[in-house]
Image 1 (spheres, rainbow, N blue to C red):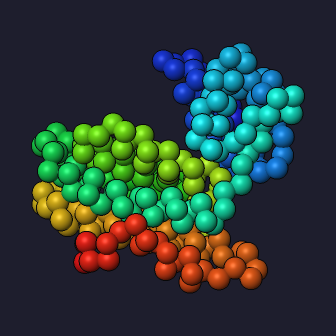
Image 2 (cartoon, rainbow, N blue to C red; image 1 turned 45 degrees about the vertical axis):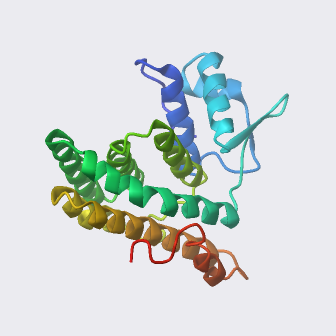
Length: 244
């Protein structure tokens, strides 16, 4: 678990530990079906067992891992069915949330989103996949946070983490960091134009492209698994003409 560097104390130690463990799972340093000791994780991070236990409980609630008494921690394996259902929910809720966010955005909010978009493009050019995903998440959650629904924020964040934390990421396998960053250009233009419908359409297109690439990438490395059936199910929770 080379990405698990010692923690530098800040405001929330548990949050830092949660982030470091999630990063290790995304990087493939903690893999499904292996068992990991909470004590070993605490020693690796240079912290006590308490914040590690709290972090593991949070990640278990998200469905990312399982804490088994006397057996340590096991990373759960997400199925393609799970991935499809995650994106069905994201397609249903994120486009209208993006539209509401644009309607609610102040001039300061738009300036902040433009700054986050620039950071995303800059990080994308470095080719650092993990950093690009983190910058993408910041931009994404800031916009959707403007919809003013805290429960929605929690659901969306949890859904994104559920897919990412299992190593089911679309870069670099399916597209480059630069391509992922550039995928936000239409959405940023809609925000600048204060066009909620354009923002909804751009958000839906972005989420759909991400889902399609991820499903195809998973199927490509799984012999006998056909992508088409899973792709057709993506719109199951969305009225077909809602954003066409």
